Amino acid sequence: MEFRWQQTVRLVAALGALTLAGCGPQKVVPQRDVDVCRGARWQTMPGDGMAPTVLARESLAWVSYDGARTPRVGDVVIFRVGDGADDVHVSRVVGVGPSEVTFVDHLLVSSGQDRIEHAAPVAACLASPSDSTCRVFEESVVGDSHRAWRVQRHVVSDADNHQPFGTWSVPAAHVFVAGDNRVVSQDSRVGPRGHGRPLPRSALLGRVVAVQRDGRCAPQLGT
Image 1 (tube, rainbow, N blue to C red):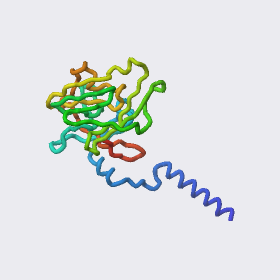
Image 2: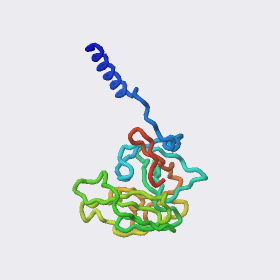
Image 3: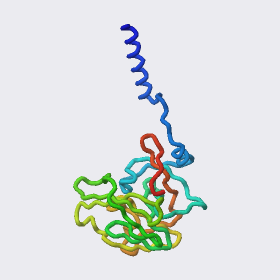
Image 4: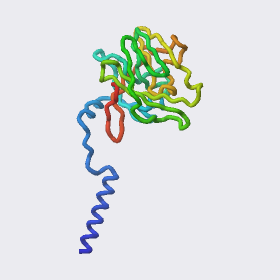
């Protein structure tokens, strides 16, 4: 009886070791996740400008734009602003030219013909300084439930709240981008009021379709 007990203990230990080594039962991945990430390319999130949606160093799956799918408000995009290895960035399209975009206290309120609405805070802030005041909101295109995303704004001092209001022009064949971590993000709002830095569509490498989390390729909100 004691011998059988010892065999059982060894068997359980061996199975545990195999599981830790990646030899255990495979996780069942939803078919939608597989379909979303099939054929996608991968990019590591370079910083915290897209928190709380995406955090620094998370892996993003992205696909190129084609004639059937052009940039639209709500897309999270990968784009290039130079030739260096650090010149690839990630942000969210909040305006498609020709149009204007308007922010009030770091929150998007209009984008061309699209009006934007905000729900009450829906989650805790992420990648936010511990000494800041931070709140999370859900932004969405009015009348389009498929285009909704989370943004956060936090203020360490009065100097951080340097954009209480602003309207920027977006020329034709350009997009206006803003990170979801609104005070931290370096994006199209950097220019003076009315003279931001919209991106030519040619700078867009593609749109993010998923984030890799917990071994899964999870479809991205707002895409």
